[in-house]
Image 1 (cartoon, rainbow, N blue to C red):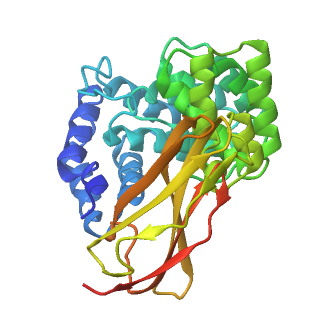
Image 2: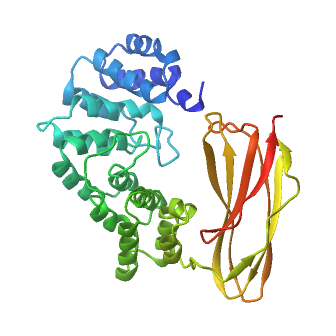
Image 3: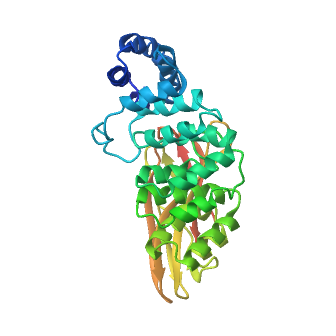
Length: 371
């Protein structure tokens, strides 16, 4: 069983039941837990959240906002007293927000439902449930979200950015324009919390997938208007443009001060061996000589076969540095050829290349055999 599934385990369902019964003595915590946990062995984390929410709906003696009031009163007095030591929260409180999204998503309940999600997000981030309110009531929900940008709780401020991301992982898409969240980000880009500005960067990274010029214009405007400190803006820009840098987008490199046509010469790639096995290390090196001063970001790109016959291309950062004319540096790396939980390596023909500020070198091929 995956580690995240343990984040909503039988013990934690029992804890939810005990907390809810503390706020509502009529709630049958034992029946709730038996009902919910019986389905857990076949469910992943997201389905466990939905199943627990359904169990709350089944066993609470009231529904709608009355049930939400019980769930709110069942929360420990503070996230800290709940044992929460991180910004994101505990998965045991994810079903509470899910319940709001499932059973209170009406125009009549909207104001109180959104306020409940504001309160729940301090215990577990509520951005997934928020997506459904944005989809059904975009104008009204965005108005509330804008007010959250000034909330004293940094987790609520982060929710304002995170819930409006165009490509939020693990969640439904929202039918709004790519630039819909920019006014919200304008208010948050200078936030003192890294939890918030990381979300701002992730939001911009989503936008950059479809509209890089909009992201560059936004970052440039923040810089010109001083909406964020130089250090804070640099962090957001590097994070927001990271994917585009890996794709070699010249405009992204130029914005960060990396010339798209750097004054450097790169020697041919040298491999320690071009016959390797899965589990061994790919050792490679190349010499980079600068013909002028420049800021450099050097990536290496590994192309590998897959079981489906398609090529998998992965880009890794090798070095970021500044060089002066006449300077030569050796670029070297030992890359472990091992499978991970998400990537399974297979034998076959592999290829390696170096990117300097997005400009690729000639690829070098090598062969990888089975273990």
